[in-house]
Every structure is written in C-alpha cells, then in structure tokens.
Amino acid sequence: MLRHVIAPERRFTQVPNDVITNTRLSHEAVRLYLWLLYAPDVARLSFSEAAARAGLKSSAFKRAKEQLKQEGYAHEWRSQGPDGRWSTAQLFSGHPISAEEARAARDGRPAPTAVKPAVGEPTPRPVGRHPKTNTVKNTSPPPVPPTPRELIPDDLVEHAALVLTSVSHTERRLRLTGRELKELAPLAADWLLRGATGRDLREELRNGLPEPVHHAASLIRDRLTRKLPEAPPIRPAPPQPRVAQMRECAGDHLQPYLFRPVAEEVLCSGCRIERAQEGTVGAARGRMKSGCPAPGRTA
Image 1 (cartoon, helix red, strand yellow):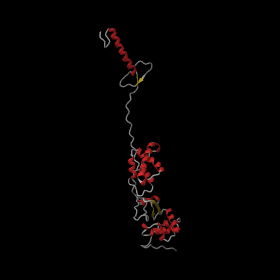
Image 2: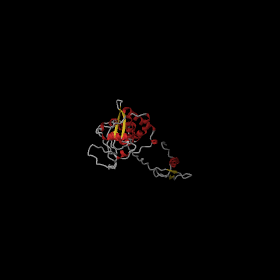
Image 3: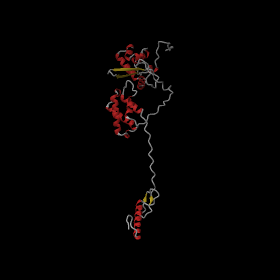
C-alpha cells in the first residue's frame, strides 16, 4: 500500500503533474527536466551542462532535449553576431509555452503567461500574468484596414520599393532580399497613398529597432501593418452652380424651341439677334423716307 508523506520544508523540488503523466517524455527527458528545474545556477547553465551533471550520454541528451523542445519546455535560437560568429540562446520553462511566448520572454516583452524562464539569460526576464488573472482590458485601437492592392497605382508601388531599398542598404539589421522587397512594396505604397512621405517611412522603420533583429522582413511587415495611418478624409465635392430651367422661346419658330435663359429672357439668342437686326433696318428706312441723312453724313 502506498502512503504519502508531507514534503519537507527545504531541499526538495516541486514537479508539475503534467510532466509526471506525460507519456511522450522519456526517462532521460524527465531527468533533464528535473535537473534544469532543480539547478540553483540554472540561469547560467546550458542544456548540455545540465545533461552532463545529470549523467546523460550524448545520444540520450539529444533525444531528451528534442522531446522537451517538442513539448514546449525547451526553446533554442541561433543568431549571427556583427563579427560573423554564431551563438545559441536557450530558454527553459517549468510549464509548456508556445514559441511566441518564448520569444516574448527572450526579448523582454509581455506575454500571456505566468511562466518564469529559467535558462537563457543571466538576469530574469519579465513576463506577463496568466490570462485568467489578467483583468486589464486591451484598449489599443484595432489595426487600420489596408487598401486593396488593385487600388494602389503601380508607380506608387515602385516608389515604395525604392524607399525600402534605401532602408535595406543603409541599415544592416533591415537587409531584405529581392523577393521580400516585392512582397513588402505594396504595404509601403499604402502609406504613401495615405499621405506619408518617404522620409516618414524610413524613420518609422529605423527607429527603436531591437537588438538583434532576427527577421528583418517580419519586423518591417509588422510595423507597416500595425502602424498603418488612417486614410485621409474624403472631401465633399464643391457645390455646382445652379442651372436655370429650360424655357420655350416666345419668338417665331416652326416648332417649339427650348433654350436656357440667363435672366428673365423670353427670346432665344437667335431671335434676339434677329429682332435687333430688324430694328436697325427699320430705323434706316424711316430716315430715308423723311429725307434725313444717314448717321455720319452731312447734307
């Protein structure tokens, strides 16, 4: 018959039940997990050093580490420094965490987890609270919807590609391939369509860069999408001058003739010209009958 005793007050390590009941973890993986959880200097202890202390051989250590990585307890990243040398960063968690949560803990960003990383950096990383205990509502505004690609002019996309190329050439942490430039150019062109300048784009992409930048294209895509400015307001069209209604001419026409009067006119322009000519001819005939000389002549 099994009996449980009260755990001692010191010199013991608490192990989650999920690790004990996880049949996907081998005995070597559980032993490596326990040693990483127990080691007092775990913040400066690599996985291989912990395996050596736990008495695991090379092949057993590799299998154990791979199982812990698959279950979300261990995370690794390889990066190349400015001098060209490669280094490996490691992070161990007592509870399974996703790759995104692990990156957030590595970069010092808040993540929706209460897990405290044990391996990877000499100093502890701040992480956020568990979702169930985090009662603070997210008040950040929703992202601005992007403009459909078919509505962005091609010349604007080409100009945006030149801006991204200048950023890629002047900032070594934001180096982009030709394929990445082609994919990101429409997003940058959307900024230009909304009134941003090339200088605005360059400053937005260069300022506040993390160290190191693990994937330049992902960082640029995130900034272009998350910080997309609002579209300029649509200005109403200027009021059109009021157009007068059509009016039927009162002159002599074979058929009713409609014209657009300027004021209170009742005759179309043709009838007004004809009336004016008739008046001039009539006045000349009257002078001839009365013997009066024509204008500009003397008797």
